[in-house]
Image 1: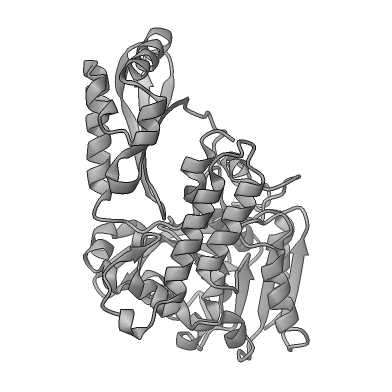
Image 2: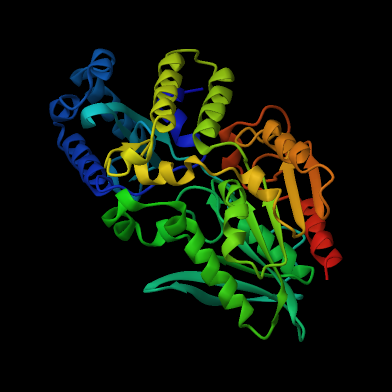
Length: 440
């Protein structure tokens, strides 16, 4: 698995919080490209850390760049730039348009902001997303709206069934990271699938861009006070309030659907949205977030084919977990970050036990889980199931062939499959609809 070590942590839980340094890393990468175009390879190689410098000399870097231009034509323009902040690295991917094709230049910044990796690879030609076959656009309509929390405004979409209403409705709650309203990851847009599928079958859906996606600068300004309250919960409350005031929506049949970390937070969110009818947990973890990170890293390292240097990465994650476990109220004023998340974030989640809280909930709950999900594995599903066994109104659905995004596949699930355009399995949509319609 090429460049596995460098990219490992970018694949874990999609955790990313915008940092003050994001813009700086993009600017540095623009400068790297400028040096390359000028043929000043020394100014690039001088930024390499010792490991990379031992592998790629100034001459070798120049040879790589000259061969790229020779084979694929001169540089035309930068088509796209993406910056990601991972627990141990900052990665900037710059899509370069050459005369004959497109190439991605990926620059990885490590400790002390030195360049840890520099990679050139052909831009992957992906099949574009297509709506699922179960979306019937004759049965619903989409309209634009927005979620407002104080002075923060988030672009949102209603998927509303045709007819007089009032309809049951679902608010979609993202997993970790700065997600858009479709929860787009690679070739999947499962929140769009959910909206189209549920609305085609008589259930209204509200989805919106996540606050950390829309307002990275504001998040950065108060990063050291950030908790899931600001990241997630406040905007869910605003979404429920918006639905409750809509004459097309039955205010007594509003459901919350949380994916991944969004599901983990449902028992906490429902304390502030008591009017909702029920909760839908989609690939939800119940053990602490930091433990999920290590579990995912172990999975990826177990199935890595390079077999090089992985123990150091895992040891680093274990070290960070140790720091998180050691946090106390006395750490409240600590302004450091762990895995790019502030101490305030980890302290806020430290004593949160979603399973214990779920046991106290007297509302219908549905748990849906894919058997090929490595991000939230079967152990999590079984913990929910055994912990809530026999509780009235709680249902479980297990799909052996589905991954973390409830998309069908085969074999061991790995991040590469997320790049393939695919849709959520229709059976998941049907099971959600059946659950909602059962609880009038």
